[in-house]
Image (cartoon, rainbow over the protein chains, first blue to last red):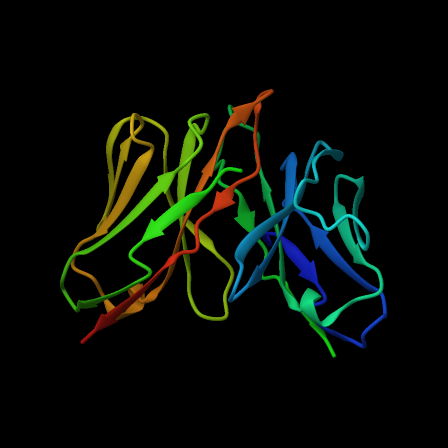
Length: 117
Length: 114
């Protein structure tokens, strides 16, 4: 099992450009979470899918951020018109549902480091 | 808005010593607490979880939970330099047969010195 796979590992964009980040959850996991991490803000929740349906996007900046999960094998986080303050490590995690046999902890991928110049 | 507070912000312990980390949630609806460890440049890795009052031990790591006060603590005995990392506490609820989002604290930075 390869774990949660995130691509690319590093992305550099110019201010105003678009960035698309990809996440492949662990096979069989029903929940996918997106977080971002900075030194100042720590680990911030962005959005969450369960069985591909959006459940909670309360952490998403409304105007420029969007996330999709078109099938059970991948999710994308898109940031339009990137700004320097968007620079962070974006982390994707997936988990089993409570009651499913196995480790139910949300397991993180290695993240995508986004740098907006 | 749900908050998870961790203390201390940073901690230095001698090799072989005991490290004690604290975490409290402000949301009375939380059901689960999670402890993650994050080494520098790496992603968080789950260490332990707890949802029942009391204590849970796995090797050198012990977690306590007091559901009445929504306080959990992580204790690391015989601390090793490899335990030096950022320790993150998170809280979540169970709703509609699934976990809610995890809300993380700011973390405790642990340094184990030889």
